[in-house]
Amino acid sequence: MKPTNRLLGGRTRGFWIWRVVAGALAALATLIGSQHMLASQPAALRAEALGRAEALYAKNCQVCHGARMEGAPYGGANAPPPLVKPGFQVFFWLLPSAMEGWVGEQIANGGNGMPPFTSLISGPDRAALAELIHVRN
Ligand code: HEC
Image (cartoon, rainbow, N blue to C red; front, side, top):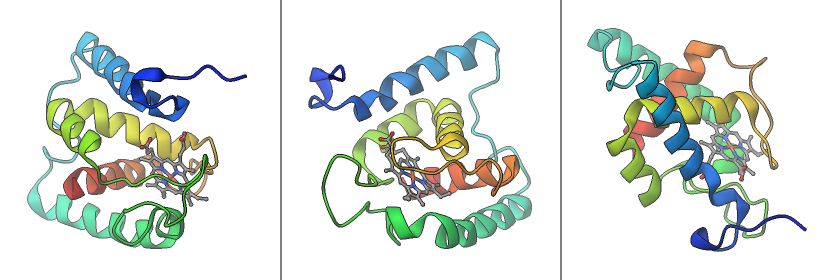
């Protein structure tokens, strides 16, 4: 039997919050800084990266997470979750760089029904996708 997480509705999937908090502490410890990753880039570069991320999202992610990041239309234990939601909004606002870092890792590693994208999507493009998810929240 898997351990459950009562605070978050008895689902182990809710652990993303704690992983983000752990990421935030790590980020603080290494003084990565409080700015999110692409925000420090010139506007044109950032717009270009976001445009690339839109295309990557449509090609690789939309099939599971929906065109508007609304999540899968079906329920169930391994249904792809929405990527725009209050929990993400709060954490992108509070801990932008940790949250983007965590989303980038989720894209790289996948898990629980999500494929890993390390070999398909480069590091900078994974960061751009994390930024896109940030912008949508
Ligand atoms: C085959 C379906 C599938 C594809 C394709 C897919 N995902 Fe996922 N994704 C999932 C599932 C299922 C989860 C839930 C994983 C879990 O609970 O650990 C998930 C979780 C996530 C999460 C964490 C959400 C949360 O609330 O914890 C993010 C962020 C995410 N995916 C982004 C992406 C991005 C960006 C892409 C495209 C590069 C992508 N996914 C492609 C199925 C998919």
